[in-house]
Length: 283
Figure 1 (cartoon, one colour):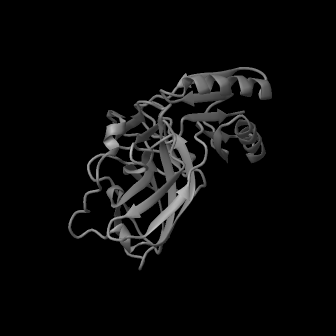
Figure 2 (figure 1 turned 120 degrees about the vertical axis):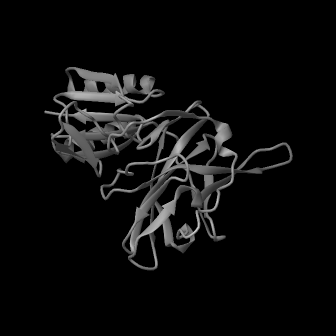
């Protein structure tokens, strides 16, 4: 079988071979790419000729944010080399556009600006968008990200929801989001950096919410859904830089549920995901 993620949900479809688990996602052949701090020191290139700019979007606002040490995309893996000093800021944006026709939105139409301490006072730093996705309808689902050369998504309808991922240092507490073609910016404060967990269960939303509340009380960011677990029992999968956090979450889950909690590293050849950890609470 093959499992597709729709929203943060999972839809099982027949396939001749294998089982593909997806968080955020669809399965594609992927290339591993490490992203370092030096990748941030660039300016956004203009969109190719004929494309509608993100400057045409109105009432742009940030509706959801998480942090992550990785973004496993449809076109490759990007991850943080030094999670103690920086993280991916994953943002969900909502906006309106002039009409309902199709338009392309480019990751590099957006850029983050923020201040860092310098010898002569605060200095501006900029962060490009490493990946972009068309956000899914389900809350907590940032969509299937794409990165690489001129990553883009095609959107239609008058209301647009997209997701962007950029690298920001851990000591930055306020950023401004700019778009090519306009001087308007959205300035917002950043919450505390925490490891992110996506929780899905077949035991009902109440269970998912109880797990999320427990994780939140211990310093984790959790998104929830129900009816989507593809595993019997409790399975926790983690990204490369989140193993220590996953072991702590494992202990917390064993205290809450009793019994065995299986922990394993995400299979990055088959998973597209923007969370540090994926938690399945099955029957």
